[in-house]
Image: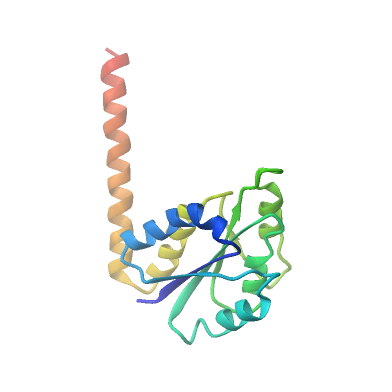
Length: 164
C-alpha cells in the first residue's frame, strides 16, 4: 500500500492534524508526519516532496494556517495528489488560509478541504489510494455503510420520540 505524507507548517497545527492521522490509522494506511514550513524550511520541504513518489508515497496532505503557502509549495514540487488543510487562526478564523490554499495557478492543483478539515483530508487521501487497492476500497465502503446505518438508527429514535 502506498503511504500518505502529512506535512504541517508548525507543531501548533498538530491538534487539528491528529484527526486525520486517526482516520488514516483506522484504515491501516501507513503515514509519515513532518513539520516543514514553506517559508522557514523551504529547501527541506522541497527535498522531501520531490523524492516522495520514489519513497512510496501516494498522496501528500499539507496543513498550514495564516499565509498557508505550504500546500502550494508542495504541489509545485511533485505530481502526487496534494490535499490542503487550511488551519484556522485567531484573527481571521482561517479564511485567509482557505483562500491561500484553494487559489492555485492552472496546472498546479491542490485539493482543498474545509478549514480544520483534517478528517476529510484523510478520507480523501484514502479514496485516492483505494483507486488501486481493492481491500482499501472495501474498507471505505464498509465505513460508509456503518455511518449510513448509524444515522438511520438515530432517525428511528427521534421518530419514535416525536412522531408517535
